[in-house]
Amino acid sequence: MAKVERDWYDRYMMPNYAPAAMIPVRGSGSRMWDQEGREYIDFGGGIAVNALGHAHPQLVAALTEQANRLWHTSNVLATEPALQLARRLVELTFADRVFFSNSGAEANEAALKLARRYAFDHHGEEKDRILAFENAFHGRTLFTVTAGGQANYRQGFGPLPGSIEHLPFNDTQALTEAFGDDVCAVIVEPVQGEGGVIAADQTFLEAIRRLCDQHNALMIIDEVQTGVGRVGTLYAYESFGVIPDILTTAKGLGGGFPVAATLSTAHVADSLKVGTHGSTWGGNPMGCAVASTVLDIVSEQGVLQGVLDRRSRIERSLRELGEKYGVFSDVRGLGLLMGCVLTEPWQGKARDLMQAAQDEGVFVLVAGASVLRIAPSLIISEEDIAEGLERLERAISNFISADNA
Image (cartoon, rainbow, N blue to C red; front, side, top):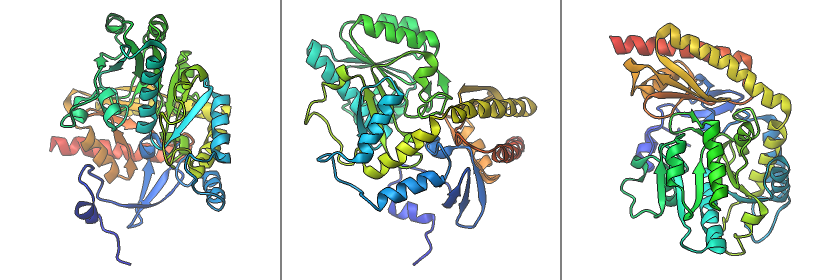
Protein backbone atom coordinates (compact mmCIF):
# COMPACT_ATOMS: atom_id res chain seq x y z
CA MET A 1 0.00 0.00 0.00
CA ALA A 2 1.30 3.46 -0.90
CA LYS A 3 2.45 5.70 1.92
CA VAL A 4 -0.17 8.29 2.86
CA GLU A 5 1.13 11.75 2.01
CA ARG A 6 -0.01 15.10 3.36
CA ASP A 7 -0.67 16.41 -0.16
CA TRP A 8 -3.49 13.88 -0.44
CA TYR A 9 -5.50 16.32 1.64
CA ASP A 10 -5.18 18.99 -1.03
CA ARG A 11 -5.95 16.49 -3.79
CA TYR A 12 -8.87 14.56 -2.30
CA MET A 13 -10.50 16.54 0.50
CA MET A 14 -12.61 19.69 0.55
CA PRO A 15 -10.49 22.72 1.44
CA ASN A 16 -12.35 23.87 4.55
CA TYR A 17 -9.46 22.98 6.88
CA ALA A 18 -5.77 23.82 6.89
CA PRO A 19 -4.24 20.81 8.67
CA ALA A 20 -0.65 20.73 9.81
CA ALA A 21 2.10 19.44 7.55
CA MET A 22 2.73 16.44 9.80
CA ILE A 23 0.42 13.41 10.03
CA PRO A 24 0.01 11.80 13.47
CA VAL A 25 -0.10 8.01 13.51
CA ARG A 26 -0.02 7.02 17.19
CA GLY A 27 -0.89 8.42 20.58
CA SER A 28 -0.41 7.31 24.17
CA GLY A 29 -1.40 9.38 27.17
CA SER A 30 -0.50 12.98 26.43
CA ARG A 31 2.06 12.18 23.74
CA MET A 32 1.69 11.65 20.00
CA TRP A 33 4.02 10.50 17.23
CA ASP A 34 3.95 11.37 13.54
CA GLN A 35 4.83 9.34 10.45
CA GLU A 36 8.51 10.14 10.90
CA GLY A 37 8.52 9.01 14.53
CA ARG A 38 8.76 12.52 15.99
CA GLU A 39 7.16 12.92 19.41
CA TYR A 40 4.81 15.70 20.51
CA ILE A 41 3.34 16.70 23.87
CA ASP A 42 -0.41 17.24 23.45
CA PHE A 43 -1.63 20.39 25.22
CA GLY A 44 -4.63 20.68 22.87
CA GLY A 45 -6.42 17.42 23.64
CA GLY A 46 -8.08 17.26 20.23
CA ILE A 47 -9.84 20.56 21.11
CA ALA A 48 -10.77 19.43 24.63
CA VAL A 49 -11.96 16.02 23.37
CA ASN A 50 -9.28 13.63 24.63
CA ALA A 51 -10.27 14.06 28.27
CA LEU A 52 -8.19 11.05 29.33
CA GLY A 53 -5.46 11.36 26.73
CA HIS A 54 -4.78 9.01 23.84
CA ALA A 55 -5.51 5.29 23.93
CA HIS A 56 -6.49 5.16 27.61
CA PRO A 57 -6.47 1.42 28.41
CA GLN A 58 -9.90 1.40 30.06
CA LEU A 59 -11.46 3.17 27.09
CA VAL A 60 -9.75 0.84 24.65
CA ALA A 61 -11.07 -2.11 26.64
CA ALA A 62 -14.63 -0.75 26.74
CA LEU A 63 -14.60 -0.06 23.00
CA THR A 64 -13.08 -3.43 22.12
CA GLU A 65 -15.52 -5.36 24.28
CA GLN A 66 -18.53 -3.60 22.80
CA ALA A 67 -17.18 -3.84 19.25
CA ASN A 68 -17.09 -7.60 19.67
CA ARG A 69 -20.73 -7.64 20.78
CA LEU A 70 -22.91 -5.08 18.97
CA TRP A 71 -22.08 -2.11 16.72
CA HIS A 72 -25.30 -0.49 15.62
CA THR A 73 -29.07 -0.93 15.69
CA SER A 74 -30.44 2.58 14.96
CA ASN A 75 -33.05 4.15 17.21
CA VAL A 76 -35.59 1.49 16.29
CA LEU A 77 -34.15 -0.44 19.24
CA ALA A 78 -32.81 0.66 22.62
CA THR A 79 -29.48 -0.90 23.51
CA GLU A 80 -27.99 -1.68 26.91
CA PRO A 81 -25.03 0.74 26.55
CA ALA A 82 -27.35 3.64 25.64
CA LEU A 83 -29.71 2.94 28.51
CA GLN A 84 -26.82 2.59 30.94
CA LEU A 85 -25.26 5.87 29.80
CA ALA A 86 -28.58 7.72 29.97
CA ARG A 87 -29.18 6.49 33.49
CA ARG A 88 -25.66 7.50 34.54
CA LEU A 89 -26.04 11.01 33.12
CA VAL A 90 -29.34 11.45 34.96
CA GLU A 91 -27.80 10.20 38.21
CA LEU A 92 -24.87 12.62 37.91
CA THR A 93 -26.73 15.78 36.83
CA PHE A 94 -29.90 17.84 37.26
CA ALA A 95 -31.51 16.13 34.27
CA ASP A 96 -34.34 13.62 34.02
CA ARG A 97 -34.12 12.75 30.32
CA VAL A 98 -31.37 12.31 27.69
CA PHE A 99 -31.27 12.45 23.89
CA PHE A 100 -28.16 11.05 22.15
CA SER A 101 -26.50 12.33 18.99
CA ASN A 102 -22.98 12.35 17.56
CA SER A 103 -21.49 15.83 17.96
CA GLY A 104 -21.77 19.06 19.88
CA ALA A 105 -23.47 20.78 16.96
CA GLU A 106 -26.13 18.05 16.86
CA ALA A 107 -26.63 18.25 20.61
CA ASN A 108 -27.14 22.01 20.37
CA GLU A 109 -29.40 21.62 17.34
CA ALA A 110 -31.57 19.28 19.40
CA ALA A 111 -31.56 21.71 22.34
CA LEU A 112 -32.67 24.64 20.21
CA LYS A 113 -35.37 22.59 18.47
CA LEU A 114 -36.58 21.30 21.83
CA ALA A 115 -36.80 24.85 23.20
CA ARG A 116 -38.81 26.03 20.21
CA ARG A 117 -41.10 22.98 20.35
CA TYR A 118 -41.65 23.37 24.09
CA ALA A 119 -42.61 27.02 23.63
CA PHE A 120 -44.95 26.10 20.77
CA ASP A 121 -46.62 23.39 22.87
CA HIS A 122 -47.07 25.51 25.99
CA HIS A 123 -47.29 29.12 24.83
CA GLY A 124 -47.98 29.23 21.10
CA GLU A 125 -45.97 29.91 17.97
CA GLU A 126 -45.46 33.63 18.73
CA LYS A 127 -43.04 32.73 21.55
CA ASP A 128 -40.05 31.90 19.35
CA ARG A 129 -37.24 34.38 20.03
CA ILE A 130 -33.86 32.96 21.09
CA LEU A 131 -31.26 35.09 22.85
CA ALA A 132 -27.61 34.21 22.22
CA PHE A 133 -24.33 36.05 22.68
CA GLU A 134 -21.64 37.71 20.65
CA ASN A 135 -18.51 35.59 20.04
CA ALA A 136 -20.34 32.44 21.10
CA PHE A 137 -19.84 29.16 19.24
CA HIS A 138 -22.50 26.46 19.19
CA GLY A 139 -21.70 24.41 16.08
CA ARG A 140 -21.80 24.44 12.29
CA THR A 141 -25.32 23.37 11.39
CA LEU A 142 -27.40 26.18 9.96
CA PHE A 143 -29.38 26.60 13.18
CA THR A 144 -26.37 26.43 15.50
CA VAL A 145 -24.13 28.62 13.34
CA THR A 146 -26.90 31.22 13.40
CA ALA A 147 -27.12 30.99 17.19
CA GLY A 148 -23.35 31.38 17.32
CA GLY A 149 -22.11 34.92 17.72
CA GLN A 150 -19.39 34.98 15.06
CA ALA A 151 -20.65 36.54 11.83
CA ASN A 152 -17.83 35.16 9.66
CA TYR A 153 -19.11 31.63 10.27
CA ARG A 154 -22.57 32.62 8.99
CA GLN A 155 -21.52 34.66 5.99
CA GLY A 156 -22.62 33.26 2.65
CA PHE A 157 -25.00 30.65 4.07
CA GLY A 158 -28.22 32.63 4.08
CA PRO A 159 -31.09 32.81 4.38
CA LEU A 160 -30.61 31.94 8.02
CA PRO A 161 -33.14 30.83 10.66
CA GLY A 162 -34.89 33.86 12.14
CA SER A 163 -35.81 35.17 15.59
CA ILE A 164 -32.28 34.82 17.00
CA GLU A 165 -30.77 37.88 18.67
CA HIS A 166 -27.14 38.31 19.77
CA LEU A 167 -26.24 40.30 22.88
CA PRO A 168 -22.93 41.29 24.48
CA PHE A 169 -21.58 38.48 26.66
CA ASN A 170 -21.58 39.17 30.41
CA ASP A 171 -23.73 42.29 29.95
CA THR A 172 -26.63 41.86 32.37
CA GLN A 173 -28.19 45.22 31.51
CA ALA A 174 -28.35 44.43 27.79
CA LEU A 175 -29.81 41.03 28.62
CA THR A 176 -32.50 42.53 30.84
CA GLU A 177 -33.45 45.12 28.23
CA ALA A 178 -33.67 42.50 25.47
CA PHE A 179 -35.90 40.10 27.40
CA GLY A 180 -39.61 39.82 26.79
CA ASP A 181 -42.41 37.29 26.90
CA ASP A 182 -41.69 36.31 23.28
CA VAL A 183 -38.30 34.84 24.32
CA CYS A 184 -38.43 31.05 24.31
CA ALA A 185 -34.81 30.36 25.27
CA VAL A 186 -31.37 31.71 26.09
CA ILE A 187 -28.34 29.69 25.02
CA VAL A 188 -25.04 30.38 26.76
CA GLU A 189 -21.59 28.85 27.27
CA PRO A 190 -20.18 28.91 30.84
CA VAL A 191 -16.85 29.63 29.16
CA GLN A 192 -16.74 30.97 25.63
CA GLY A 193 -14.11 28.60 24.22
CA GLU A 194 -13.85 29.57 20.56
CA GLY A 195 -14.64 33.16 21.48
CA GLY A 196 -11.43 33.66 23.46
CA VAL A 197 -11.74 31.46 26.58
CA ILE A 198 -13.84 33.97 28.50
CA ALA A 199 -15.71 32.74 31.58
CA ALA A 200 -19.23 33.89 32.33
CA ASP A 201 -19.72 36.09 35.37
CA GLN A 202 -21.60 34.53 38.25
CA THR A 203 -24.12 37.36 38.31
CA PHE A 204 -24.65 37.08 34.54
CA LEU A 205 -25.62 33.41 34.67
CA GLU A 206 -27.82 34.07 37.68
CA ALA A 207 -29.55 36.86 35.74
CA ILE A 208 -30.22 34.51 32.81
CA ARG A 209 -31.79 31.99 35.16
CA ARG A 210 -33.90 34.62 36.90
CA LEU A 211 -35.14 36.23 33.67
CA CYS A 212 -35.94 32.87 32.12
CA ASP A 213 -38.06 32.03 35.14
CA GLN A 214 -39.82 35.40 35.01
CA HIS A 215 -40.67 35.11 31.31
CA ASN A 216 -41.32 31.36 31.04
CA ALA A 217 -38.24 30.84 28.88
CA LEU A 218 -35.76 27.97 28.94
CA MET A 219 -32.09 28.28 29.89
CA ILE A 220 -29.79 26.22 27.65
CA ILE A 221 -26.23 25.75 28.85
CA ASP A 222 -23.82 24.67 26.13
CA GLU A 223 -21.28 22.48 27.91
CA VAL A 224 -19.86 20.86 24.79
CA GLN A 225 -16.39 22.12 25.70
CA THR A 226 -16.66 22.75 29.45
CA GLY A 227 -18.36 19.48 30.38
CA VAL A 228 -17.05 16.14 31.64
CA GLY A 229 -14.61 17.46 34.22
CA ARG A 230 -12.92 20.11 32.10
CA VAL A 231 -13.38 22.90 34.68
CA GLY A 232 -12.93 20.82 37.84
CA THR A 233 -16.57 19.88 38.37
CA LEU A 234 -18.29 17.26 36.25
CA TYR A 235 -20.24 20.05 34.53
CA ALA A 236 -19.52 23.75 34.80
CA TYR A 237 -23.06 24.70 35.88
CA GLU A 238 -22.21 23.05 39.21
CA SER A 239 -19.35 25.53 39.71
CA PHE A 240 -21.81 28.41 39.35
CA GLY A 241 -24.71 26.82 41.20
CA VAL A 242 -27.06 27.75 38.35
CA ILE A 243 -29.24 24.91 37.09
CA PRO A 244 -30.36 25.01 33.44
CA ASP A 245 -33.43 23.52 31.82
CA ILE A 246 -31.38 21.99 29.00
CA LEU A 247 -27.68 21.09 28.86
CA THR A 248 -25.58 19.89 25.93
CA THR A 249 -22.48 17.74 26.23
CA ALA A 250 -20.06 16.20 23.71
CA LYS A 251 -16.28 16.52 23.13
CA GLY A 252 -14.87 14.93 26.31
CA LEU A 253 -17.92 12.72 26.83
CA GLY A 254 -16.52 10.02 24.53
CA GLY A 255 -12.88 10.70 25.30
CA GLY A 256 -12.24 10.76 21.55
CA PHE A 257 -15.09 8.60 20.31
CA PRO A 258 -17.94 10.60 18.69
CA VAL A 259 -20.89 10.77 21.07
CA ALA A 260 -23.03 13.64 22.34
CA ALA A 261 -26.08 14.18 24.48
CA THR A 262 -28.81 16.73 25.14
CA LEU A 263 -30.08 16.64 28.72
CA SER A 264 -33.24 18.21 30.11
CA THR A 265 -35.87 18.06 32.80
CA ALA A 266 -38.75 15.65 32.22
CA HIS A 267 -41.28 18.45 31.80
CA VAL A 268 -39.31 20.01 28.95
CA ALA A 269 -38.38 16.66 27.38
CA ASP A 270 -42.03 15.73 26.99
CA SER A 271 -42.21 18.03 23.95
CA LEU A 272 -39.97 15.67 21.95
CA LYS A 273 -42.73 13.20 21.25
CA VAL A 274 -42.27 10.23 18.92
CA GLY A 275 -41.19 11.42 15.48
CA THR A 276 -40.36 15.03 16.40
CA HIS A 277 -36.57 14.56 16.26
CA GLY A 278 -34.03 11.81 15.67
CA SER A 279 -30.50 10.67 14.90
CA THR A 280 -29.67 7.44 13.08
CA TRP A 281 -26.35 6.95 14.87
CA GLY A 282 -27.37 8.68 18.11
CA GLY A 283 -26.85 6.32 21.02
CA ASN A 284 -24.37 4.15 19.12
CA PRO A 285 -23.54 1.20 21.41
CA MET A 286 -19.78 1.64 21.07
CA GLY A 287 -19.89 5.36 21.76
CA CYS A 288 -22.17 4.88 24.75
CA ALA A 289 -20.00 2.10 26.19
CA VAL A 290 -16.91 4.31 25.99
CA ALA A 291 -18.76 7.34 27.39
CA SER A 292 -19.95 5.40 30.43
CA THR A 293 -16.36 4.44 31.16
CA VAL A 294 -15.25 8.06 30.75
CA LEU A 295 -17.89 9.21 33.23
CA ASP A 296 -16.93 6.52 35.74
CA ILE A 297 -13.33 7.74 35.68
CA VAL A 298 -13.86 11.50 35.47
CA SER A 299 -16.60 11.67 38.12
CA GLU A 300 -14.19 10.41 40.77
CA GLN A 301 -13.40 13.23 43.18
CA GLY A 302 -9.67 12.60 42.92
CA VAL A 303 -9.75 13.20 39.17
CA LEU A 304 -11.80 16.38 39.53
CA GLN A 305 -9.49 17.70 42.23
CA GLY A 306 -6.57 16.78 39.99
CA VAL A 307 -7.96 19.09 37.31
CA LEU A 308 -7.83 22.02 39.74
CA ASP A 309 -4.34 21.08 40.90
CA ARG A 310 -3.07 20.86 37.33
CA ARG A 311 -4.71 24.16 36.50
CA SER A 312 -2.84 25.84 39.34
CA ARG A 313 0.49 24.33 38.26
CA ILE A 314 0.11 25.16 34.57
CA GLU A 315 -1.37 28.63 35.10
CA ARG A 316 1.48 29.59 37.42
CA SER A 317 4.06 28.56 34.82
CA LEU A 318 2.19 30.27 31.97
CA ARG A 319 2.05 33.52 33.92
CA GLU A 320 5.77 33.26 34.60
CA LEU A 321 6.45 32.73 30.89
CA GLY A 322 4.18 35.63 30.04
CA GLU A 323 6.05 37.92 32.41
CA LYS A 324 9.49 36.69 31.38
CA TYR A 325 8.92 37.20 27.65
CA GLY A 326 6.26 39.91 27.77
CA VAL A 327 3.98 37.81 25.61
CA PHE A 328 0.85 37.09 27.73
CA SER A 329 -1.24 39.82 29.35
CA ASP A 330 -3.55 37.34 31.09
CA VAL A 331 -4.25 33.63 31.58
CA ARG A 332 -8.00 33.13 31.85
CA GLY A 333 -10.71 30.49 31.67
CA LEU A 334 -11.62 27.75 34.14
CA GLY A 335 -9.94 24.47 35.04
CA LEU A 336 -8.03 22.93 32.17
CA LEU A 337 -9.58 25.22 29.59
CA MET A 338 -7.07 28.07 29.54
CA GLY A 339 -6.64 31.09 27.33
CA CYS A 340 -3.33 32.96 27.15
CA VAL A 341 -4.09 36.47 25.91
CA LEU A 342 -1.30 37.89 23.76
CA THR A 343 0.07 41.31 24.67
CA GLU A 344 -0.28 44.26 22.32
CA PRO A 345 2.92 43.67 20.27
CA TRP A 346 1.76 40.13 19.43
CA GLN A 347 -1.93 40.75 18.87
CA GLY A 348 -3.26 38.81 15.89
CA LYS A 349 -0.39 36.31 15.92
CA ALA A 350 -1.76 33.43 17.98
CA ARG A 351 -1.65 31.07 15.00
CA ASP A 352 2.02 31.90 14.41
CA LEU A 353 2.80 31.05 18.03
CA MET A 354 0.79 27.83 17.69
CA GLN A 355 2.95 26.85 14.72
CA ALA A 356 6.14 27.73 16.62
CA ALA A 357 4.95 25.46 19.44
CA GLN A 358 4.31 22.60 17.03
CA ASP A 359 7.80 23.07 15.59
CA GLU A 360 9.13 22.55 19.12
CA GLY A 361 7.03 19.42 19.65
CA VAL A 362 4.06 20.66 21.66
CA PHE A 363 0.49 20.99 20.41
CA VAL A 364 -1.57 23.98 21.54
CA LEU A 365 -4.69 25.63 20.11
CA VAL A 366 -5.93 29.12 19.35
CA ALA A 367 -9.16 30.84 20.39
CA GLY A 368 -9.35 33.70 17.95
CA ALA A 369 -6.43 35.64 16.51
CA SER A 370 -4.94 36.77 19.81
CA VAL A 371 -5.49 33.98 22.34
CA LEU A 372 -3.48 30.79 22.72
CA ARG A 373 -5.74 28.02 24.04
CA ILE A 374 -4.58 25.11 26.18
CA ALA A 375 -6.86 22.13 26.93
CA PRO A 376 -4.79 19.06 27.83
CA SER A 377 -5.86 15.70 29.16
CA LEU A 378 -7.51 15.96 32.57
CA ILE A 379 -4.99 13.40 33.88
CA ILE A 380 -1.87 14.67 32.13
CA SER A 381 1.21 13.65 34.12
CA GLU A 382 3.58 16.04 35.89
CA GLU A 383 6.35 14.83 33.61
CA ASP A 384 4.36 15.71 30.49
CA ILE A 385 3.35 19.07 31.94
CA ALA A 386 6.97 19.95 32.68
CA GLU A 387 8.26 18.79 29.31
CA GLY A 388 5.43 20.51 27.45
CA LEU A 389 6.06 23.81 29.23
CA GLU A 390 9.79 23.58 28.45
CA ARG A 391 8.98 23.10 24.77
CA LEU A 392 6.46 25.94 24.88
CA GLU A 393 9.08 28.26 26.36
CA ARG A 394 11.48 27.44 23.53
CA ALA A 395 8.66 28.11 21.08
CA ILE A 396 7.91 31.50 22.65
CA SER A 397 11.59 32.44 22.52
CA ASN A 398 11.84 31.42 18.86
CA PHE A 399 8.56 33.15 18.05
CA ILE A 400 9.76 36.46 19.51
CA SER A 401 13.19 36.18 17.91
CA ALA A 402 11.71 35.44 14.47
CA ASP A 403 9.26 38.32 14.76
CA ASN A 404 12.01 40.74 15.72
CA ALA A 405 14.39 39.58 13.01
